[in-house]
Length: 229
Image (cartoon, rainbow, N blue to C red; front, side):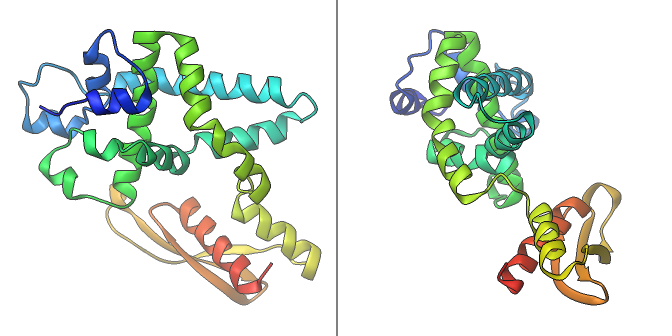
């Protein structure tokens, strides 16, 4: 069994019920190989933590930026609570060391691990909420996640690449970009797409992803780089 006390020290939190903390790191796959483990997986905690996270971030943005519109605040919130950002923060907290995974999942890195880390971060918030209450969640989220907000605003990271490329293309060349699937493969539950972004007939860039949305976003990001927009 892993020792979670270094994580408590790092977070400066002393859990009254350690099982909440441990459960936050139990991935479903771990129980497939360890069916007699005494705790359930973390998905219910993740469900709870997701709601607490959304409320804390929403409340912070609402109170801190009274002059900003609903649309802007929504974009900022989305940039803060998306899987990529949550996974980054979870990695900064050394969450990888504490994950309870199956042997197969332990070997998986890349996107699959990123989603596990993001889910675990939400589950950890759920665990803190049950053990320490709402105020402790506020402090935790402000300290580790909301600190990323200035960079998100400064770098325009809240703008998705598709919107940016469309704005630039319409302004610079008076053309609305179009997207076409160039290749797709794999079974329904694990599809893969390569999508091209075009300005009229000209292929500007290609993007790859496990959904059309992801591949389009990647294509737009590359198109912005290629065009230097």
